[in-house]
Image 1 (cartoon, helix red, strand yellow):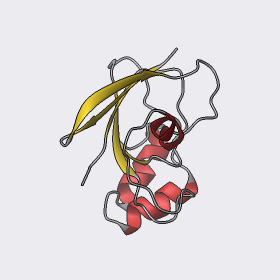
Image 2 (image 1 turned 180 degrees about the horizontal axis):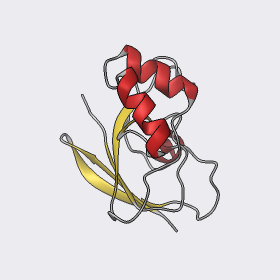
Image 3 (image 1 turned 120 degrees about the horizontal axis):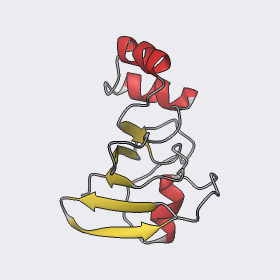
Image 4 (image 1 turned 90 degrees about the vertical axis):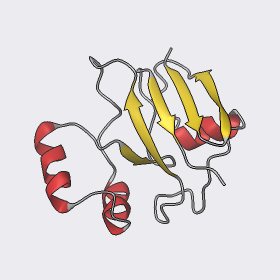
Length: 118
């Protein structure tokens, strides 16, 4: 059962347990279910409002699956990724720490999700 810790400068950290092996819930869905105030807009990976920084708790674990095509486009547009970084991620098979909460599906790994708050 993966442990997800949500952290923000303006809110108390909140740790939740995600259903193991579901591989269907996004970070945003988990946040909404657990009353974590991550900002969001379109909820389909086009606006970039739900930008979060995700890190694996254990250095031995991979952090999340590959970026979706929508994430690549939006993260590049908002200046969080360059084309060189995208190319390197495809070769190294490691995703960026910057993700869109509405697109990143939670896997069986413990992660820290940092999100901005107003």
